Image 1 (cartoon, helix red, strand yellow):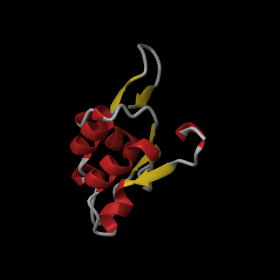
Image 2 (tube, helix red, strand yellow; image 1 turned 90 degrees about the vertical axis):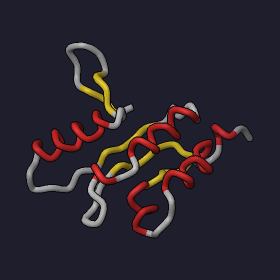
Image 3 (cartoon, rainbow, N blue to C red; image 1 turned 135 degrees about the vertical axis):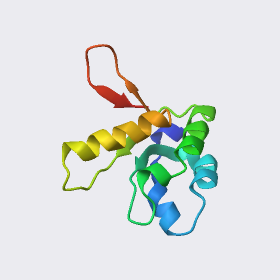
Length: 106
């Protein structure tokens, strides 16, 4: 069985932080098995306070070709999305898909 055929992981950075684990070290160790990285801040660690720069470096160094999922829970609607995209752009985790289209996560 090839590794592509095996079940893959949904890696949640916020849950690692909540459990007191090191999400950067854990992501580095598990990256070959990760299909998707979950990005969501919480009450104790907002998105902007997460180790996003380090996460980006682990993803790039490991040649990650999976997806990143951004979850937003807020009554502020589209403003919350704009704020989150701004944070992800600051850490190099969001780029325009191509001119004239919607943006996409890296």
